[in-house]
Image 1 (cartoon, rainbow, N blue to C red):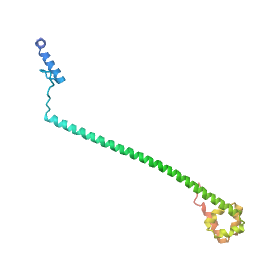
Image 2: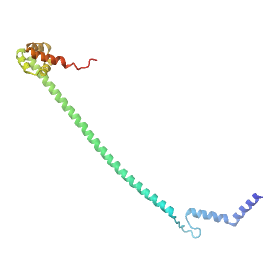
Image 3: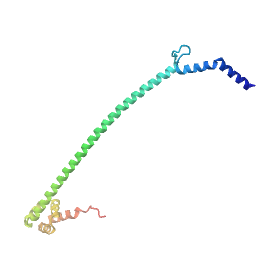
Image 4: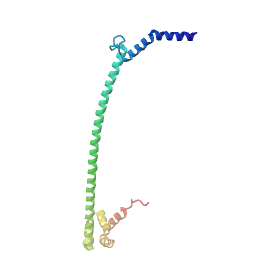
Length: 181
């Protein structure tokens, strides 16, 4: 009985046109037009919706400003990174130039010591002995260590005992701190 009553009511609604009217109103609302004139419907916002809308617009503006500020910071950081890379490259270049200069200076100093050592080796021991007696023991030990042992021995033997002893102490102590393992 209930089922028959529901079916009869459904048929009357369809035949009476109420169903089509309701469907038309729903379609008009979805399209945003008025049912009577086909004109756009006038939407009035409530106070709460306006407040939320304004808050969302303010939040959007804040986000846009923050994004702009972040873009500026990223550009500044990118420029700073580029500048830092340039300065680092310049520093590396300067370091290489300094290393080359230091190597040239060390080579020149070593060459000078080699030439001077050869000069002292080519002198007769009687001529070299007075020079070595006036030298600082560390300085004299440096030359004697570079000389051929027979020539260095002749010079060391000709020195007065105190000078020979001081030079020998320097010789003995030179490599005392060297690792033995």
